[in-house]
Image (tube, rainbow, N blue to C red; front, side):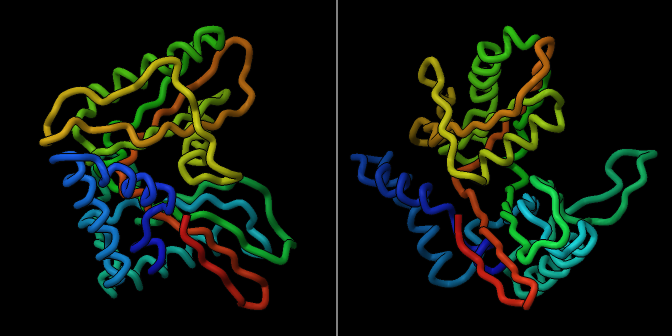
Length: 260
């Protein structure tokens, strides 16, 4: 949890280094973001004040159950909040009449489990503001590819400088909204390798709320087979501070944690 709270994906840092070399105020802006990452790593502190919603993508449960994984992560979150690595920022009871079942992190299984020797997962810390412009919708499969990029372009125009640019856009597709969202998170976490999606035209967030025009840092994508009649599309907006870590825990208690 300490590593995930303080680290930013290595490929994001490399891209910020490249952008920081640009001339004028644009380079100064991206240089400030890069300096923020460097200070966070040096001081083992959060990279921004909103350290986000924890999303755990489980690739292999190993010997653990879903409940055990949830309880272990919830305990780690409490410890991280106590150490000041994460800020308590969860709210329950927002929708009247809906029963809330605690403040557990979101766990998305990517594979089965049971009986294996290793628990393997990827933890993402998603800033609350980063999630604000995420969207999901369904369309006819024959129109899905074209409409996905049209939706993405409109979404980026609405998002403008929010969440904090440069933005990362993750796209997922599948036979249901749930599967499309799962695919989008899979792409964002880079599970199985980064999947770069290539838009048919250049996508650029509109407007200039900052001294420099925000850039689109990357477009990532993943998809599952869909029904010929209908395909669902999920679009996740992510600020530049993409934090997370790979977690591997063996049955004998040994573990390894690596940044994205």
